[in-house]
Length: 255
Image 1 (tube, rainbow, N blue to C red):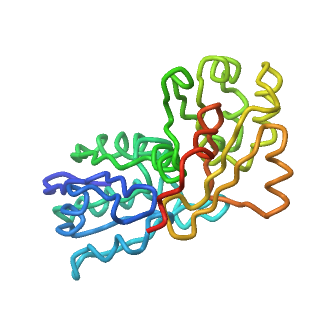
Image 2 (image 1 turned 45 degrees about the horizontal axis):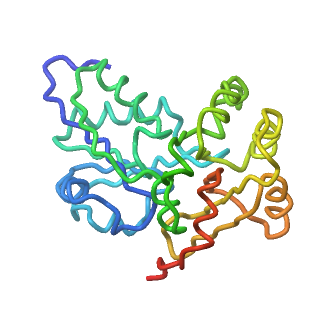
C-alpha cells in the first residue's frame, strides 16, 4: 500500500464499555460525534451508534466466535485504507480496547504506516460485571488480588499453555473472559491445583444490559447449572470467595 505524500488521518481506539450506553466516557462520546468513519465490533451496543455524525461512514467488522465478518488482518487493512482519506477514524470496541480486545495488534499494524493512534479506555467487562451483580472484585481480608484471564485464544491452543497453577494459586479472585467454551477444562485445572469444589463462581451474560443474566454456583455445580438453563455467551466468569458478597447485598441495578 503506497502512502507516500498522503495526509494521514488519526485513529481513535475507543472502548465502548460493557453495553450500557450510559457507561460510555464523555471523551469517547465526543470523539464518536465528530468522526468521519466509525469501524465497530459486533458487541458494541447499537444505541451508541446514535451518537455518530449523520454523515459518518459506519462499518461493522464485528467478530463473534465462528462468525467473522472481517478477519483481524482485514480490519487492520481497512483502518489503514480509511486513514489515507479521512481526518478522524474511530475504531470502536466493546469493553476496553486493550483488555482482550486485540487493540495492541491494531496499534502495531497502524504504527507500521506512521498512522497516529490514541487510546480512549473503556470500562472493561470484569469491572462492570462485578458492579452490576453487586459485589467488589477486591475486599479487605477476602480478596487482595485479581487476575484477568482469557478463556479463549486463537486456534484454542494458547489457553492450554497458560501457567494456570500460578494464576489460580496466586490470585484471590480470577476473572475469565470468554469463559464458557473451555470452562469445564478450566474448572478441572482449579480442582487439580487444590481449589475446593465449594469455591463460589458467578457467570454474567450480557453485562449491564436489560437482558443481563447471572448464574451463581460453585466449581462443583456450575457446569450442570449451565446446561439446565441453557446459559450461553457472551459471558464472563468470576471465581473466588468475594462472589458470596453478591448474595448478601440487595440488587440495586434494575433501572
